[in-house]
Image 1 (cartoon, rainbow, N blue to C red):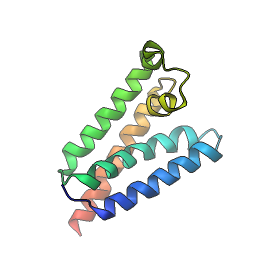
Image 2: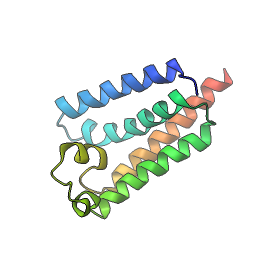
Image 3: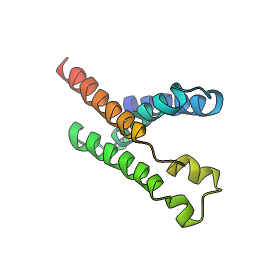
Image 4: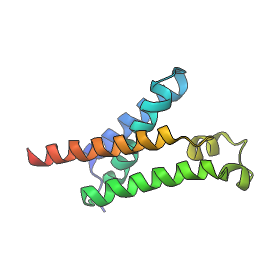
Length: 122
């Protein structure tokens, strides 16, 4: 296992961007949709920072993890675990299921695949 500095720096950039969105934006588009679009990119860059895994398995794994987290919201996992009042749990698990979030995750992963294929082609 070797740190890939490029992916790690992209992870840090996306993490800062997500933090800025969460802390300072309370609009009807960027926070609810762009944040979900970017979070799968953040997860992908984190994974690629530490493991030289192939594009498609990594991207699909990230997408499935995002779907799983979203589905945990549908089943009110935070409440079932008794952590619904925890800020960290709300941040990691989320609060409310949304089909739009699933679309945002999917579009984010599609964007990752397109960018990576273009990057690998050049």
